[in-house]
Figure 1: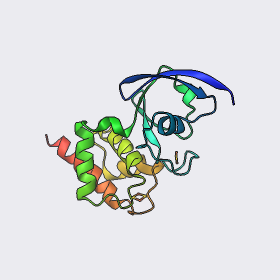
Figure 2: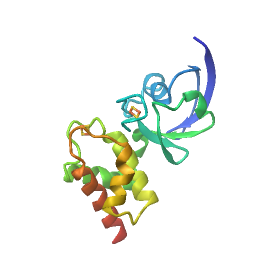
Figure 3: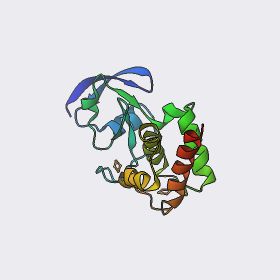
Figure 4: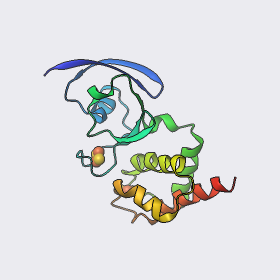
Length: 158
Ligand code: FES
Ligand code: FES
């Protein structure tokens, strides 16, 4: 199998590796870097479980070639341990029963954080629209939407 050199920043660390040319970013992170917080569901760009952050915007790592991430800044769920917004979202997800099996949760949290940062005055309809690319087979979404709305409300009252 053909390989290629890749260098990029992952969670604030410079990383340089020889990778398979056809490796997805998700496989590279999970298998080469052992960052297993990014989950894989459909592997076809549909479910959003693999959502992470590339250069400040959410992206689906299952359909992103690792080789296309040369010199980019990638952040996975592991990098948000001390992030204030993510901490508020984690608490809200827990409080509002926004997860059951938790498989969709890393991707859901990444999208939720993007909503909170990018659309601070989003209403419920907008939150639901923004979440359209993240599927959850357990919760029925209402807890997820409530959790995100509660973080938006708390921040707008600060
Ligand atoms: S695993 Fe990437 S969108 Fe489903
Ligand atoms: S909590 Fe199970 S898929 Fe969302």
